[in-house]
Image 1: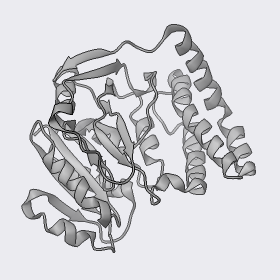
Image 2: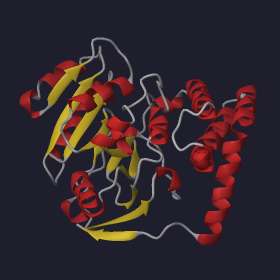
Image 3: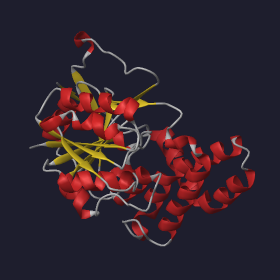
Length: 300
């Protein structure tokens, strides 16, 4: 089997049915759908139980966080590639077809998807609006990427053996675990970024973890500290690439901390993360001179 779709959820009863339905309805290659309930207390488990054998359902006995839930789904999976989907998001109807085409053509270790952000109801796209081609950019590895990418588990497709090599998601990152995983996967091999079409829908709502600025500031400091002590691959030879890859996240949370009035924390983050910001700025200057890597077009 080529794909395992791993849906994870904690207290997302208002959204989980739409997430699972989108996974079951996706066109393209056959895929198993694994749903991991992270000890929900809002009745989500009853909603999921109604799917019967259409999904493989697992549950954590205590709330352990998204990373632990994804690792449980990862250990259950039999697909060659793992598609991750948060319980408040949804796959586009053509997502599996697009991923299958990219993998058939390029055999990457990692696929970075493009997300459509929305609020309210999931966008409905008529059959006439389904894409007929895929535009991709191919990179030596994730750390050589030269286009903007907003990290989200829902935007990641990872070869299962590659995820095994880096021992899965880091359970000790309650947020920013997606950035941590990307840094762990930074030098594993070919990475494909899907420039278009968007293959998943990211729901914006008050419960999004990204709204918790203090928690994110704490975790980005942990990411920087992990880099400082050599916790990510590539050694000294790839330090510039790692720093450039992390710099954008530092800048984003410097701005958010400042807007939230957390000036002392913003200054502390700037002092710790300035090498990453500097490397990111240098990469952007180089990109402005030479332009991004050319895209390739694949027919669907």
